[in-house]
Image 1: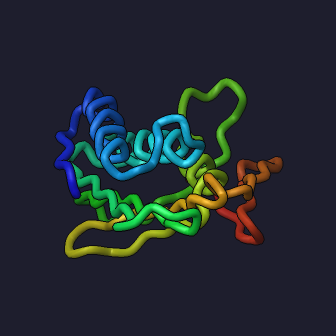
Image 2: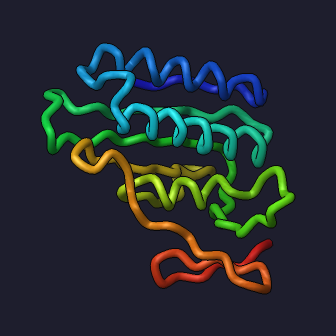
Length: 154
């Protein structure tokens, strides 16, 4: 299942509604932590694609055929930029810059790959966990540590 998202910030709301409608038919209840977490991740990844590229993106949900306690949901967003995603450590007054930190903290797994002239950012949620439990740690100097990796603010 996929949805083309136009390069307009108002598309983020449409992407969330689309994701909720797909979950409704999958056997995953709207009040499950997995569903709530997935909709938040849709919001973050689509926002990043729309804001940072200014181009259309494609949102894809891969739902399990049978919803069991071990089921995994995969979310992918393809965009036209070949720039690598860069996690940042936003200050307390910043209005942005927390998207990938949220993805890192909420998803069980996430990553990215180059796809044609652009890239694909993906994350996975296991139904049994309802989301990841890793939390980014921000330090002085604008760096964030994610499970042993450090990323500088750019």
